Image (cartoon, rainbow, N blue to C red; front, side, top):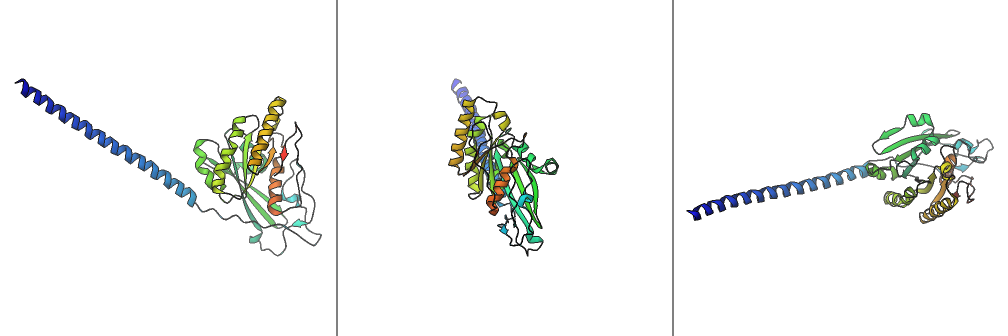
Length: 290
């Protein structure tokens, strides 16, 4: 009798164990399916990002005209308190049709959150332009239009948010860009340390864009102790040299080096006869050119 009860109990236990094994196997299959589903979704999103067709960047090298009637290249970029372009005869060559006079440029802007990146760009494009900017998840697209006589330079700036959700926007912001701004907060060493990581990610998608390292909030930076300022300056210059990039300290609040940075980019792109002065004076906004 006892043996029969034991065998019955053992049989029930075996059935129970089989059910547990079956459930575990089913769970394992579901978990693997979920992992494969997430991997497929990740690859698919990457494929979509990389396959988005962005219009090819189109720009012409500015050439000097022989006649004396050409306008000042100051018209290229508004002054905004920075040194002006020289009043030379540099402009577009004659003979372009209206469609060929349009020059489209793309600039990417990367950096951590809360470093004043968007405020810096708004200072350049203007409040009215910022109101009409295109805002998407993880990226903010702003436009700036400049004129040289009959020629129009349309500059589109891709401001990538610095949080983890915006990392997928790095490829689309960097691809075909003529310049990439790597920005950090001068009062935060953490954001400065992140610049190298942003640079490494950007170079995966664009190896030819002009790199510019920009330190923001210079007005707050000059309030820090001198030894801290010197440490930040030394580290920022070392990073910029490693990236083969020019370095600018700026302030959107006081419009320090905001327009000058974009003038520098335009001068390099179009071979304009305008140069910015190097400045390594302690206590002043650093400009270290590469």
